[in-house]
Length: 473
Ligand SMILES: Nc1ncnc2c1ncn2[C@@H]1O[C@H](COP(=O)(O)OP(=O)(O)OP(=O)(O)O)[C@@H](O)[C@H]1O
Ligand SMILES: [Mg+2]
Figure 1 (tube, rainbow, N blue to C red):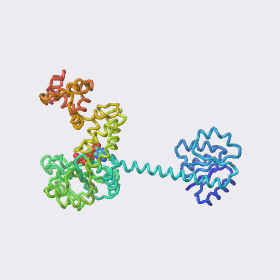
Figure 2: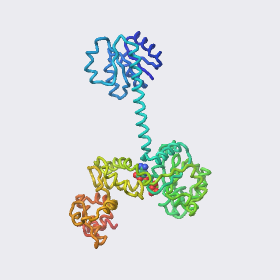
Figure 3: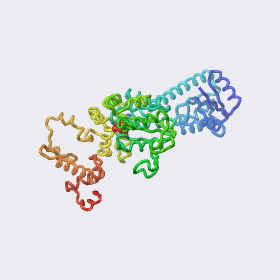
Figure 4: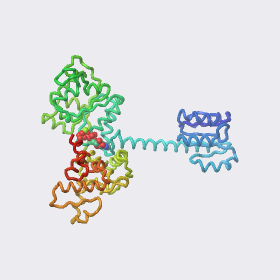
């Protein structure tokens, strides 16, 4: 424990320093409050032992300043006999420290120092606990306290600093891309680029040039030299998403790059040294993908130095409240809404759902609920229609006509066509948003363009004619 002793009387100060050192504490000394403040700003002390009456800055002022900047350790103030009474009003203002009257009773001082030390230890432990809590519950944009997620976090911390390839597996929407980003930002390459390539979204013919780039004239259409993802990711991380969708020939080329750490642009003569860390993800079961001929076995073993598997959300439902909280903050910011919280009933309702789309689906449900709720806590009624099956089924006789008359509800009857039902829903949503089409489209989960098309189709849009060309163009 480090103790800072502040006293303007040097002989008293030195005497105390000797004694306290003899009790096993580490000592620094200062001659007045200003000097003490400077020392406190440069290093940290566990206990402050200060005289009250000092020139320049007295003991109270010192405590006040330290309290204001949030660096006040447990403190003991030494006062001249009889001055305690004068100081009483200040005692009320500043709590959390001890008084010791002069002349100092050494037994009392030792006792107080030990007590102060115990307080300090507790404060440090609390701080550490809080830090660990926030550390374990959140990693980058990943939230999760379920033990399976804790294992994922531990793995990320362990492998992030290395340059090893990592294969990230898990169903769609479980957070594979977030893991890739966390690996990058916790690595020594964090300042470098993070480049993601989605193998499923690229036509086969383009994949190779997207990854390796090409020289001018390498193939028809290659009118200019172009750097690929591998080159753009130099000094950083290349994330190959949906690896199982990469053509077999390309997988073979990728394997070669992983072995030699060199590559060429298509049509290029020079070999480029690859200073790139490769991360890959697939939502297929890799062993099954190998069997189905979708994933090369040799590539799999090369990438599988480390595998991080994300469990589906249905196997970690205890994380739902935590994830919802994080999404609330995010969605309030995005949509400029003021939803204060999610009600227990809302969370209970979410826990009942199967979550086949995993966390991405959960995010969409929360986003939609936040838009609809606006500024009140999220309730089950804010969950989209398709999700309320369990509750509706529990109701033996849904009173449809009555429901239809409630604001914010649409009456749909057997015998209607899907078009009619859709039209009713669009009408009601527009009414709800005060004819704000952007917000209505957002609630309906379609683009504004699609909404306009449907409005025209159902002749719900007065000024359709004027916009017709713009939309079709
Ligand atoms: N643990 C988590 N904490 C908070 N948000 C999460 C978490 N996991 C996923 N998400 C959210 O879900 C969305 C989908 O995650 P991500 O894109 O990483 O999934 P994926 O596994 O790559 O899915 P796909 O296989 O469909 O590409 C993210 O944008 C994020 O909003
Ligand atoms: Mg993904």
